Length: 244
Image 1 (tube, rainbow, N blue to C red):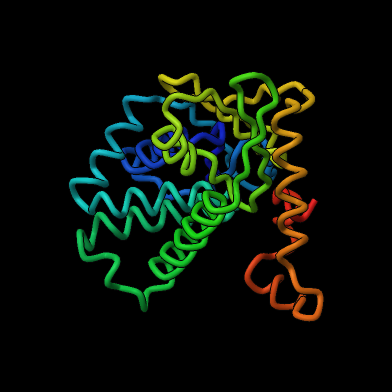
Image 2 (spheres, rainbow, N blue to C red; image 1 turned 135 degrees about the horizontal axis):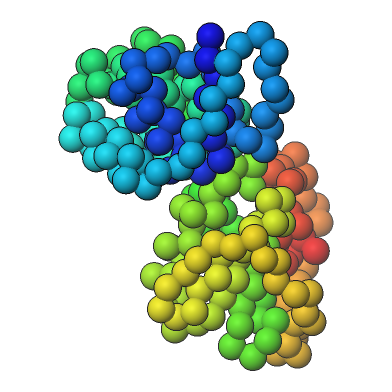
């Protein structure tokens, strides 16, 4: 009974799948080193990330299963659920057997859970794109904070990089202390937190104007907090200017 331990990265997980496949060894569990607790009743094997092996597994998934399957796997990985590692592993093994039609097997628990979790992560990425509000914290530098349930930062940054090609911006995931930084050419995700900086006077004036506008167009007699929470969960309100 073997447990595979890896560094928690997507390439690391793909490396685990490669090693398991070529060693013909099915793991009892797959764990990230961040949450790993030594198991005294089995063998724990640490697998070092190998980019070449990771790429081979990803190419195999695209060729033998589908590009869509690889996307679903990545989205499930971004859920950050510890159980997702074994779920991905089982899905890939099943996909290598079934092939390109795997996602038609929705009656299979593995396929069903992968599709369902992938859709949840994808849905939250769209929700973040709709909700993000940038503030100009320095002249020409825009900042936005988010705290999504899932790690959707890698999914939303390409959208804003394409939309705001001529702007410097930072999207800060305060829940994970990760920041996506765009410099008008390319973007990276880093664990360096942006410094707390006062917003510019122009941005402060804009925010005040928007709050006044929102207050004036609202009709007290028609306020329905239950309906608001239904369409806009309260956990997102702190990133909306009009709710601050």
